[in-house]
Amino acid sequence: MNHHCHWTGCEQQVPPKMWGCNRHWFMLPRELRAKIWATYVPGQEVTKQPSAEYLSAAREVRAWIADYITKSVAEREVVQSRLNGRNLKKVVLDDIGTPHLKED
Image 1 (cartoon, rainbow, N blue to C red):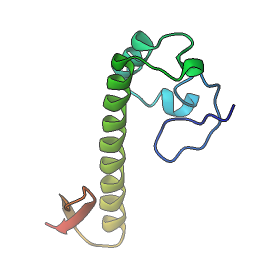
Image 2 (cartoon, rainbow, N blue to C red):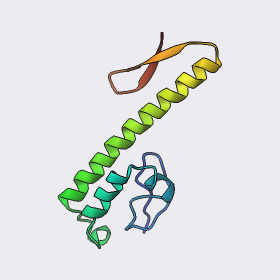
Image 3 (cartoon, rainbow, N blue to C red):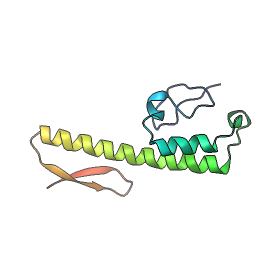
């Protein structure tokens, strides 16, 4: 069975009963990992019928990942701008949530 990590953009193959690769699993906050485990029903990867609670936890994880990625991109852009001699500090999100930096 072909199953990859659920982290956005990660194609690492993992066993179907696992949420994701070790690297990305342990990047999640402990409380989100606990929610995934608490709502996981053994065999749901076989039946393809996860519980509503598991799906809710998975949506919460996806939202956290999106926020984490957005903040990471913005932080890298601030560092790069400073290396380039610009003083960009203010992060503004456009209509679709993409971060853009504005000069201070």
